[in-house]
Amino acid sequence: MTYSQKWNLESIFPGGITSPQLTQKYDLIAKQINDFTDMIADYSLAQDKNFTVLADLADLAQNIGAGIGTANIFVNGWSSVDYGNSVYAPHFNKLGNLWVSFSSPLNAFQKLLSKLDDETFEKAITTSRLAPIAFYLTELRTDAKRLLDDKTETLINKFDLDGQQAWSQHYDTISASLSMSYTDENNKTRQISAGQALNMLDGEPDNEVRANLMTNYEKMWAEAENLTSDTLNHLAGFRLTNQEAHGRQSHLEQPLELNRMSRETLDAMWQVVDANKGMFKPYFERKKQLLGLKSIGWQDQVAPLTNIGDYKPSDVSYDDAAKFIIEQFGKFSPKMASFAQMAFENNWIESENRPGKQPGGYMESVPDLHESRIFLTYTGSVNDAATIAHELGHAFHSAQLTDLPFWRDAYAMNVAETASTFAELIVNDANVKEAKTDAEKIVLLDAKMTNPIAMFLNIHARFLFEDSFYTERKHGLVTPQRLNQLMDNAQKEAFDGILDVRHPHFWSSKLHFFIDSVPFYNFPYTFGYLFSSSIYAQAQKDGDNFEEKYIALLRDTANMTSEELAKKHLGVDLTKPEFWQTGADLVKKDINEFLSLSEQFVQ
Image 1: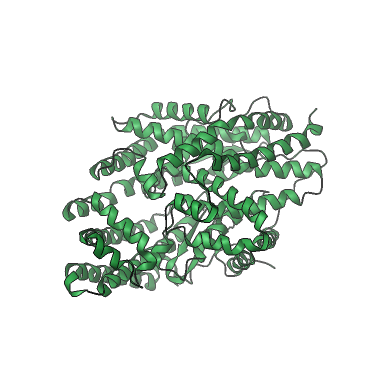
Image 2: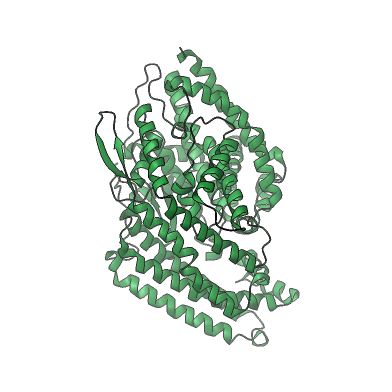
């Protein structure tokens, strides 16, 4: 079957970014916010004995959130395929203003919940309409204790538009304007964008070309360091001031709260990551031999192996990748397979490799339609099918919650990465198992190592950098030179000396450091990878009984803490290193197989 590689945004709002229906949606959201504000102002507990009005308020708040989410994915979708075009800026500003307008009555709703005594609140959240969102309402009530007076909260939210959000958008403007020279294997030089360079770096098989790319990529971001350091410093400064104003003692409090996990869990996870880094050293030594390199640079972390024995790499067509994903999903869950096929057929995926697109990939839900949209760039490499599977995992997760209230879809980033990484594991493992020769298996095992390298080493470097940066930022601006030093130190520690050439301007080039909505956009990935490894091991044991258990876990992801989720559905304690070691042991098994099989190809 042939699938389109361009997504369908017209089914959300027809007519592109100038769609009249989008304008009407803006107007409807604004009216709903006004109605929500008035209802809260008029609320009387004495006249709401059965909590009907309270439930109406919760429903309206969720409708507003869903509406803003739907409009946001539509605008962001158009912006992603036309990266850097200023025509979308007024729409992002409009959405930001709507969110600020909504934040004030939402804060008032939280305070309303906090004013209910414990007995009354417990009665309210046991009613039929509020019981499904009891956990989220409890979180809102608890968070209300941090809120300042209404006038101050409104002012902070307004400042955020031209503060944290503006600096994040400014980074996009900087990134979209950058370009660099690139010399290919035929010695032809041309200009490419920052996004194109990033897409090429991971998949370039030629050592010299890859090194040339990396040198120029580092140089390009070095030339932009004054702009990006200003951006990062001011974004972080706003965040730290806001956190302090709301009574947070540490820069890690908020990200841990957002991920519904404890510091004990985070520490246990990093403890295991640190204890197992040694297993990567023989892997990289062998890879250095297979690639014919004298040293390992940043650009070589996930460099593809191409000249192993008689193995000849070939591009995988998009349609073949789709077919493979659907087939492999079906071995674990018929519902996953059916969902993936539907997503391909309904053009939910934007994957075409063309200029002008935003780098990277993502999945976003379209709440009003109970759909999703997936963005990526498909190049035909061995890793690309796994990337599609990853984003489809996100979308499948969201699809299991469409019959639940909107606030039950508010799962944290760490468990969001669980479903996506699980889907990716299925495809990567299947690739390895279907290898026809030792040479092919070595190449596919190496491709599978992309994830653990990122989760144990690269992501840890990001965390160490941000932790150090935010610690220093509390005392003043951090210069570009110091940022380079902090990043270089983080890479030395995280990679345990593996890298001979590092990427000190990674802080400048990595979009995740500049996202305004999520602080510490790093450790949830490692959490999701190791958590999903446990689920994957369980899936192989359970066989046909797995699907029902897996969906039950997904449906609970916004209904309890991470620790409670793991205890209920996996029977494990996340605060203990033993759980995290299970995932590390699976990686070590792959490394040992890679070393054993590849020995015959070392000269």
